[in-house]
Image: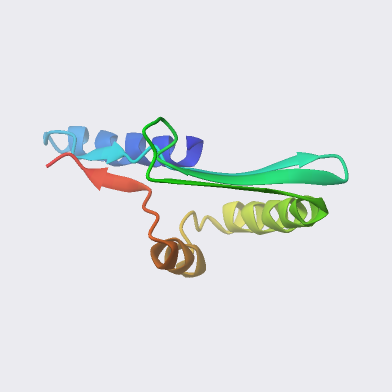
Length: 104
């Protein structure tokens, strides 16, 4: 959710600098990998604030490994300056998850 909100802020600041009205709004969707030592919990809440359209939760040791893999992926994409990789856009689209919505 923090990544979504910062993306919304950047888009809206760009519109403000051009003298336009803010156009984007966050979707309040949450995707989380919570690491708890050698185990963890993964959840998806669309939107995060009830009432929700989708709620999914699983726990297990696989979440710890998924979190390690995601951290490596995330740090690499930040070092490269590529905040929205084609892979990430594709996976979110296939899952029906969007980061931004238009105010209009």
